[in-house]
Length: 284
Image (cartoon, rainbow, N blue to C red; front, side):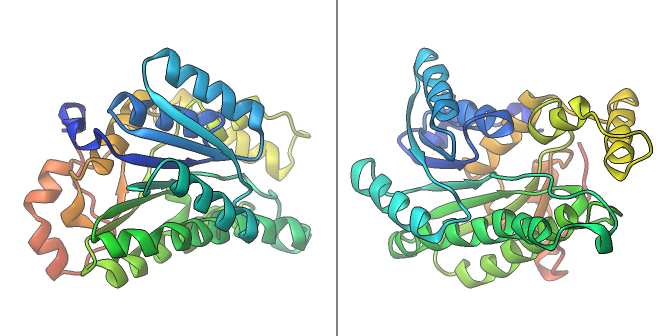
């Protein structure tokens, strides 16, 4: 069960969390630092990043911050190069930076807003993976975890930018795992569940015109919370730490969710590989 994962495998490792200045990214960064990793949090707002650093250091952890917009190739390349030159080789990358994107029927949304969601989710994941992979491949070790959503494996009308971009990230991780499986690098798409943090909290707080697509999307998310179909940030963080520490390496390339039973899945790893399964469905 995810609650019993031993995080000792992260001691001495260097982890990078994108979108680490607030919300889920901050929660994940704190959990990784508590498990022994030195954590770099990156994002666009340095004030938010510094607050994450303060919280990690107050708890006795080690962390650094770098102002990087994952949608900007030059910033990603230069920023990751600086991090590796000052802190060390990146052992773990958590692609977490994200946004809701426009919410409306496809033919009504602004094309640039729609595509910007792709630039952050898909382009940002691509750029950050590309920045760390040469070193991971050379060392024959490393892990990449990209934060996705059930919206990436199920339709979500009026939220196509979010849904389609998350689907693309899931498929990108599947492809990347096959490119790196002989290089000692493990790659995952991870759905952390619906939480009262990050984009989930934004939906709870959203105020939109009654009857609008945004209001309907926010209302649905609030109903999920009311029905008890949410998870605690602590549970999601424990699961991430377990994956980051190597508890899921035999499942590289798969779409994992916070509800999965990692032990049961690991026990069936050969069957999963033989069946070439992407979504797994063994719940705890």
